[in-house]
Amino acid sequence: MRKIMNKAKVMSWYQWTTVGGRVLTRIISFKGTVIQCVKQLQRKTPQYLWDVFVKRKQSGYFDHIKENADDTTVVCQVDYTESYTLQDQDQIQSAHWSKKQVSIFTAYIWMGGSGWDGVVDSINGTLKRFVWMGVMAGARCSSAKEFVNICRRKTKTILVALVQQAQFDTTEALLKTYFQNIVGVPNIRKQHHINVLNKDVIECALYATCKDKYVFKF
Image (cartoon, rainbow, N blue to C red):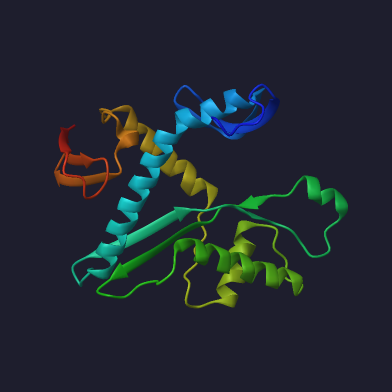
């Protein structure tokens, strides 16, 4: 606080804002004095430090189970990554304002010492690069199906599959039926490690190696 030159100076800043416990998909702009912004940052610092702590604990545990995976263990890493914007090399200017996107869901497994040495994000980047190079070479990519076809032509080491919208709709309807008839787990958003003990019985913890755990029965 003592190093702030002008605490009363008006400034603008951006931050994520929650409504009803859910994070909005856009960043909200705020305006106030420098000291107001600093105090807001101070209030958020403890939670930020806790999030960093949990992230490091989870990352360390993930590395541990990958390194110790055997023939009876499968470690799966999944990630819902950013979408790929469909576009052609010679598209007209008006297409810039109405581009479609393809959602990419990547996954990789480790079993018995085999697996990817990098991160799932690198798979996503590789596929995007393959498609972009194909488009620059004249390939057409105006749908999810064409995106998958280009990927399959470019690589045999990464398995790429197309999931149709109808499959999403069917799965969504099925999951809604399940979740409407299930008891909510207390503070589930704070639990980063869940272990299935038995049918309808789970064990929850703040992070994988946390000694404080609790058992929940559905």
